Length: 268
Image 1: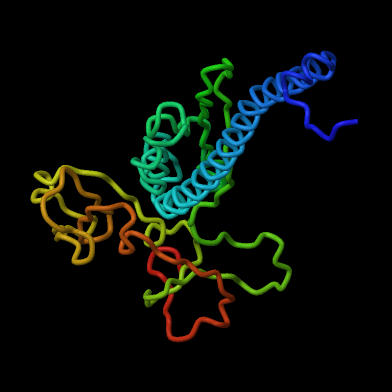
Image 2: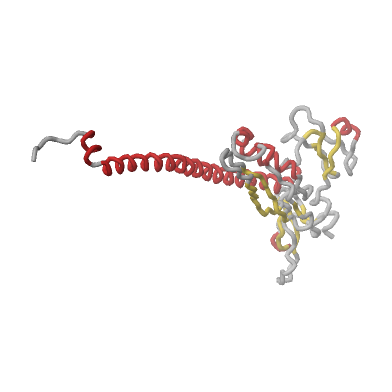
């Protein structure tokens, strides 16, 4: 038998079945490749969206934590949370630009905190941030997915007398800079009554002792629409979060109070 190699024409002539089989294999590989490419692309895109959703949830949780921290600070004069202020604080902590280019439905306007509340009695509350995530897949009509981040907070309102104290010793209340101790936790010298007034009104206002109000050296800068005053103080403040409007109250046994006299209102 001759060692001459068969050409492709001879293979088709003498082995027609093998030629058609080879063509089928090539066609099958082409179809499989055409099907595998979009599936692989969809898997990669899905993974990227999953990572983005995880990043958004982490960012919203961190933003909610920052907003809760601020709300707990500002809840000392008035134990209440304002959902619109929470939303602004969350957006500010995350970054409005970051939200606008994210897959959050509505961007920076898509964060909602209307389910948040704070008890004026216990100072304990829950803050929430709800939002929707859109999946821009044109082939599949996927509806937005709703997420909600929740966090419990406690307002910084000081300490209440422990009703279960069985030591028999009287508990009194002192502040860091005060010169007297108080027997009543809600003494007016401790429980500041905060009012918001117009700046134009301050000149004609007087405190309980008949004294005038002067700008706070710590927080009052420039021109503002309104200010905060107390009945017993002599300063007006630009911010509720000013440390001069807050007092850290400690509950201590009377025997541990050294160098402090009794309050003229509640110490007798």
